[in-house]
Image (cartoon, rainbow, N blue to C red; front, top):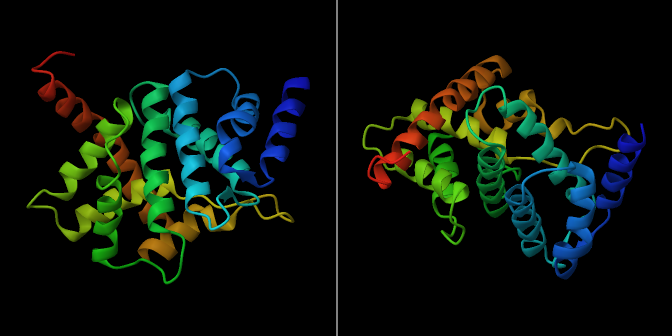
Length: 229
């Protein structure tokens, strides 16, 4: 009970705006209290997304509500991916990171809805265009998405399914105060806003992709290291 209260207190404090200059100190202190014991690379992923939120805001700060939404998103998606995505917690956080960075840079939640084949391919492109500044898991996921985008046989349906997985991993919005949930981040809303398809089709598409995506990633890693595990 005491741990749950401490977590909620940290999330409540993360709801407030945070200047970019305070992310690495005050903000990340609260993130560690909210998420508990995790490898350092996981917190690095959260910090990069938080920094992107501030960088893309005209006040150079994380807007009200987005700090807690970011942390909740990482925590929720990590738990959901654990049953689907093979690999380490660092790898799961890295996939959420690159998807979220692309979502922030590309303003995925903005109107009008993105239901065209071109917009779905652009989702992949926004991940592929992320700076290659961070080695390790994040860069490996970025490279996988770039490879998939550049395939000559990548048809509209194939790209849409990959976009389903990326948007689900990367899009988040603040919770609504009255309901305590964010309807704009629900499967049903994402399915309609981004893809114009029923929720069931969206869920099926992104689960299918998330099942085979790690296998492709491991093949690419082994190829780049000359077959070493």
